[in-house]
Image (cartoon, rainbow over all chains, first blue to last red; front, top):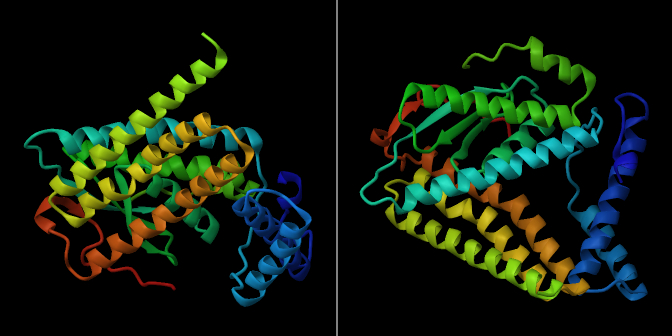
Amino acid sequence: MTGRTRRRAGTSPPRLGRRRDQLIALGWLVVVWNLLWGNFSPANLLAGLLVGGAVLVFFPLPPVSFGGRLRPRALLRLAGVFVVELVSASIHVAAIAVRPGFRPRGAIIGVRLRVRTDLNLALTAELLSLVPGTLIVEVDRDAGVLYVHVLDVRSPADLTGSRDRILAVEERVVRAVGSAAELRQLTTEPTEAP
Amino acid sequence: MSVGTVIDWLAAVALVSGALLSLAAGIGVLRFPDVLDRMHAATKPQVLGMLLLLLGLALRLRTAADLGMILLVGVFQLATAPVAAQMIGRAAYRSGRVDRSLLDVDELAGDPPRTGE
């Protein structure tokens, strides 16, 4: 799968790339259909093709430009760090929830991402939203700014730490799926508050 | 102790810890003072608590059809939970139902972004 989704910018005409994206989506929909029915059978495959085709025709998605490449080691690192953060943050929020007489204070911080593509914005926001303690309140798509609500803020140092954590998530996403140019952007783009 | 027993015990540990996380989340929803704080409790334990519950189920059931369904449940939860959380958080903020006295810093105030949908 990783070999087929890999596409460098400019190596294939947009129409062809779009056709291939739709084929990958169709394959995924057929797999989902069969998993939902519980087994792979010829009838399920056929029905899956019909339903998947209908979904793609009647609910077309806007094309996502993917100019990067998948890096397996960076992907593993992204997943591994995500699981560690997920566990520690879940325990943290659960502890706050049951601590008697504690009222947590929050803050909304705006973080400008260094790579402002739709894909990077979406992936970073998705990962941040899955980890407890950070909640996306608003997204400025044009400026590439995520407005994040942070739970349990006690000092200005906590805010700086949260900002660094969010930028670290972005960096791991770009290292896993970004293009070479996007990787360079990580070091050249300034990271001050918007 | 046979392998099956070990897997059953692992499943039990996963189920109980997933349930405890979900319980903590329920308490959090009741106790947190504000919409945004509550969203942290309401949407996130879905993630780890639910993954643990699914892991426990998978270890206990061990049949191909059930594993496929469990995988789908996990994938769709991970894909949709953040969307729900963000929509509620944004709606709460835009309609002014966020208690600003609980916020130390609000970099969104006075600088409403142009929305590019």
